[in-house]
Image (cartoon, rainbow, N blue to C red):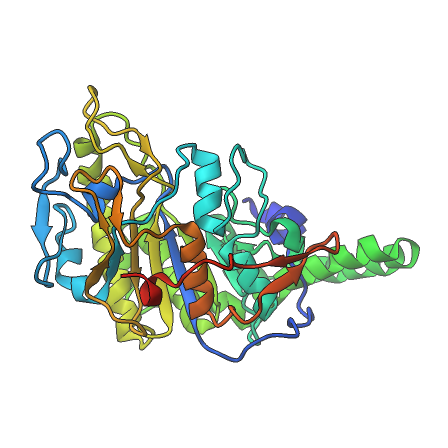
Length: 409
């Protein structure tokens, strides 16, 4: 995003509300939040959290397995740092669905709602958009309730309406947040826009008012306290995160949650490894291991371990048998999932896969259960229905869904 584009404050980036947007009637004063780390492309459930070390050579983790600090739990061999933190995570090993198409599988996992053949059209709101509807689009300090650091499909508002889409915090846009508020030129342009708006609102009231509301949302972040959370270079832990985009995005996410945002999604794609999976993971998973461990450490150091739920997942897993190109193909029956949150019993696996990790054996759970788990943590389960823009009411969870951390073993 160029600076001139940011000054225009286009609705495609900020289409979710205004600085005076009223909070939803059912807004809660709880302090829980979620950091949702999405591994786009389909990360292998085997090389991450279920290495099946006793299986055949063409099935078990190509990166081996590593023992953790919890007796009896082994994870993928490249998770060397995470292995010493297994007492602070839960691994549901029977998590999955039945969709092997990228777009529709992403939809299922990031919304909790199936949508076969979805393409890029969303049928259901993402978790963050539901949270934005529940709490209102802004916090009291001018921070967006829902922030997106990096993109993946179906992380928008669908039938909730555009203002709940979430704040799309591009890397260049974050730099502009820090600079524009100090600019006299920016303030002059803003005044000119307000004068123009006064004219247009008189002629086309709703359209122009909506545009002003959208722009004001962005201005509030620039001129208020909201932009401070994006200044990662000022953070005491910056040196721990500065070496990679994932690290800087992760620190930004932590600062946003610390400042009051309720749902931050973090995208770390590149997991569609049909060939040479071992070689690809030697860089991709090592980087994930390092920064995922740092995220967990800093969340705890800053006193957020019990209130912030960290969710790490992907749209599906990979085929249990390595293919002729030394890769793994799409596999929807099982998918990687890891959850960390001090409000629940950690240091355990939930459910089990078959010995070859090609199906579930016990403790089956799916995206609808992940949705229930997230919404329960955010104290949203009692708010069971929201009205779509077409006036139709929708329940936010399936009646037969369960909290993975409480109700499944």
